[in-house]
Length: 431
Image 1 (spheres, helix red, strand yellow):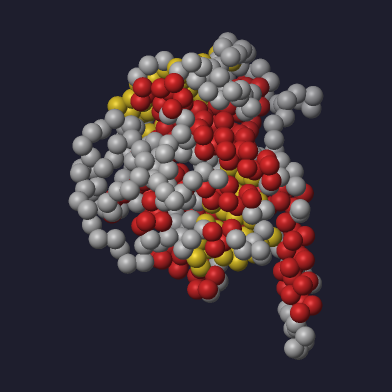
Image 2: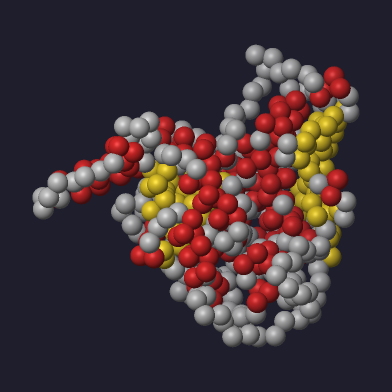
């Protein structure tokens, strides 16, 4: 069912029931002044509105085709700030995501929660007939990603993964140049992410004491399916990224972006590597236990190697494609090549042209309206996140792994296969 039809029907039914008196609306509401009539807008609920969630909220508020009708966050302060930004009342702010996914008047949701809280809301939203924008990395585990793909496809929802480099002109151009042979035969891809942690909000590097849960923060719901753990200030919000119960450090944080670019340039969006080998340095005896350094080598069936590693030099961040006749490096809106001829090469009309999107949030809205495929659909998000998880598993096990992308399993490797999923704390289950 088209979600915009659901919204229109809701408004018509509401109008039909208003028999107590005349309904007076502005020209803007009706769309007479060139705006989009309220009855034609896509209604959006934003789940998780701190940090990147706020950035996503503001991006959607700038689109006149969107009407934000609900915000949700387990932190009362985040919720209040988002309500003010969206000009909503306190009654339109919620603590529990299910109060948003369960609303009949919500067409779509933006999910920007910590990694361990992506899968369950996405699956709930899909079966509640909501279109979904979900932050990267798509999932916390391989099993979660696989189930998210199934739920989205079973329900026919429009889905956008927040890997926004798919909507950057220079990234698309770099991948087109590689795919069209401008650097000759592609043989190696390098992806470089920061080394260490980017800790925010205080000195949380060492062991942390248990603290009282702040007023207005639903810590139990923040933990959700993750293991029970005492509250301490450095555990939550942005810094969850450095704790293995919720994320895997820069392997998943920036890796989800850069491995996604590597997949695009390699032409392997629908698959993944077949061999993985890597090493990593994990701290011990502290709150933060995700790796601070890693070097992971992935081998694809086409022979291309993806070498993912950390660096202390910000100038090295990004993705570098190396071929038999040159190289191309790209990061966001910066592109360099081994020669001016490669860098300035035109892509011909009959050559490979990759998906064109100039605005990741706008692209999501466009596809809700025409029911087409987004720039970063759920399968692409899953395959890119899977590379992160494969690398993390290889570094944890400290040995080479073989992966079957079609079956999504480690052939004959019970120990590695057991790490495709994690036990969820009750009462939460993967629906």
